[in-house]
Image (cartoon, rainbow, N blue to C red; front, side):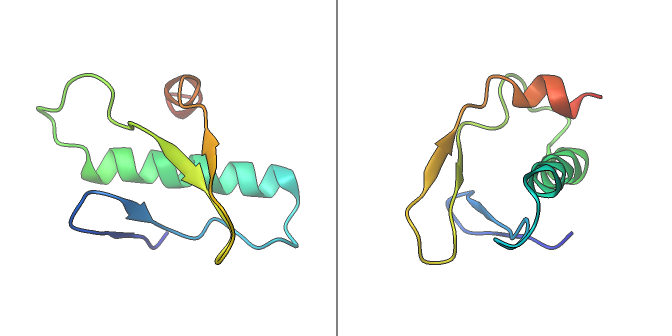
Amino acid sequence: MEFRVDKTGIIHAPVGKMSFAADSLVANAHALVRQHRASAKPAAAKGKYLKSVTVSSTMGPGIRIDTTHIDVVVKH
């Protein structure tokens, strides 16, 4: 999976297209979070690693995602 991180620590990554099924988009988003945690989270980092998640289309408005359940899903 390909993503880029800007100088403020924001991750920019595509997770699919509008034509994808909702289940596929969710699976891709979970895979992105799993990969980022496995490869980018420093061992010394404690506490909540993802502060916020916003999903948007290329030129559309962002939609905030509740991050309270992301830790539970990613651990599986």
